[in-house]
Image (cartoon, rainbow over all chains, first blue to last red; front, side, top):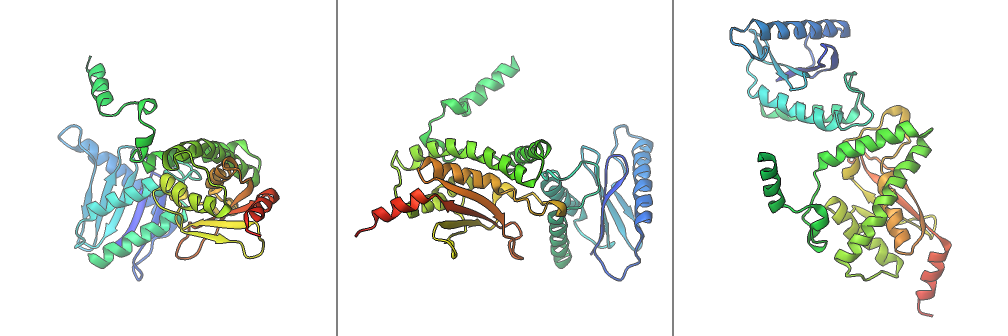
Length: 137
Length: 200
């Protein structure tokens, strides 16, 4: 099960968030913003404290009840996927979301880079992807 | 040295566009993302340079006109061996199938005659490649990015000797949110000529 998707821009600002599962405790928008900023910082720290130079930041955060998958693009945009602990292939799903982002956000002339994403086509395609993933997974 | 070597090898594989055979051009497809980014910039330019939505559609249609008028030349050479259509319906089906196939890789989805007026015809595309990635924001909901395709159609009609007023409309349905209809309103002279073809 995919629970939520967050997209964080290279400055640590939250530019997109969606919950997909009903009946779970919800965060307020403000809490989401704080969480995005915090994650951005933690991600930067994890990439620095690695004993091996040139390491990427945190990729998975695992707990008893959920997992957070993080995929950072070359340009510094982070895709965060909050899932069930048993979710297979979440990594591949973040790549697919990246693809949708590249198609429907970056190729949209009405989108201002680094700003919150309010694009219907992106929304509907993300929904479709989540439905597919949740049906098979 | 390595640079010139790679250039030579890529040159061997694919000659520059001006040296390619015009006729053998049908497999020369352009990457859709590359075009999407170009179109994105064209739209941004049109937004910056225009005062309102109508002005913007006019600009897009002008861009399309410049494509269409050159494209007609090429496609007539390639597919029609220089033959020119004289009847209205032939020209319309030429646009609906040949032009669309060459431009977008598929025929248009519908070709209809206007119900209210004799001189109106419509071509619809359920998911135009040109606007595939574009979601028009709510405050500009009247804008139809298909104006670019409209411009191409207008140029093809003009170039074939069928002057018409062409406009593009977003006719979204639940099934096809990007459906675009190109409305062609033909000049009086076209219809008069068409009548004179009919057997008396």
